[in-house]
Image 1 (cartoon, chains in turn blue, brown):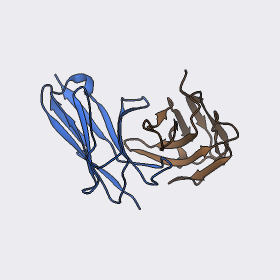
Image 2 (cartoon, each protein chain N blue to C red):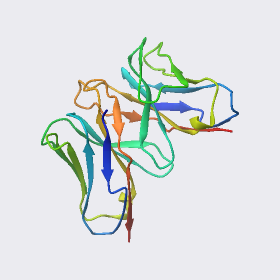
Image 3 (cartoon, each protein chain N blue to C red):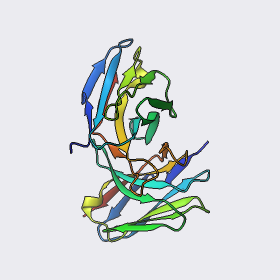
Image 4 (tube, chains in turn blue, yellow):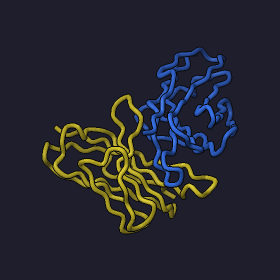
Length: 112
Length: 115
């Protein structure tokens, strides 16, 4: 059974600092997704990582995937308050049907 | 495009009642999904569909049923509601995993309370 674990689960940081969120998963998969959720809102897609070594960047966020280590990272550079949200990673458990297993989420709080 | 729409936004049910959560997408996506999100947790897949007439169970299907008669609609039926079904329900759609943009697009959610 595929398990997806994120750490940390809660992260409070100052504006301008860098930090990394980790997403580990327990069985082989080549498809990993990152989503953002604001309080009381729906999920917004951030990144789709489809192969080993994939790296994608958007603004202050960069995501990478190492399928051999079964690890994805979401790196935050020079955090700003607008990045405060909960971030989820999700792994495709089926390979071709989009049956996603989600991590517990990492709640990021960026303080001015 | 409205994207993925869900109705109702909120609902309170009594134990044992039934209801249908509606989900519609206007992006001509073949793949559709139903998730539930309990407080402070990630999403869990209830049911999914890879096309009209095709549905299959996810992680937590017990107490739910789905149908997919058209590409656009994917209703979720709760029979005999129980307090354990109190949750936020999200519908999502995707163009499919064989495309380069196969991420899932989520609806706004339905907040359901069973008392």
